[in-house]
Length: 96
Image 1 (spheres, one colour):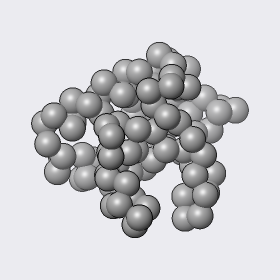
Image 2 (image 1 turned 180 degrees about the vertical axis):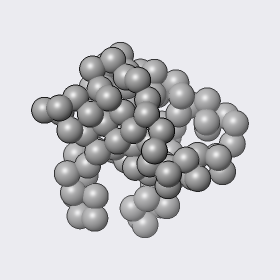
Image 3 (image 1 turned 30 degrees about the vertical axis):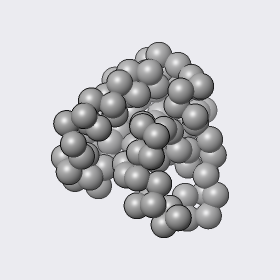
Image 4 (image 1 turned 135 degrees about the horizontal axis):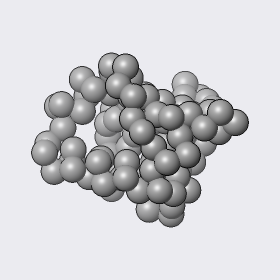
């Protein structure tokens, strides 16, 4: 797992998100890095549209990367840790 240094969060990226990430266009990869920088500085920034998920991803959070591209994050707020689990379109992640 890749460890990312985030202000306020020790962050890990799962192998699954790495394989999904390399399939993204260079533009979408750049958007992800921009959102990651935003997350580093303010994990509650309105552009991230961070919200708690239910169902299969209950307890995890979703953040917006682009209009349809999302990343699923497992936040351990008490211990300042974030694990990025998946990245994909809304349909790819939630089947809707």
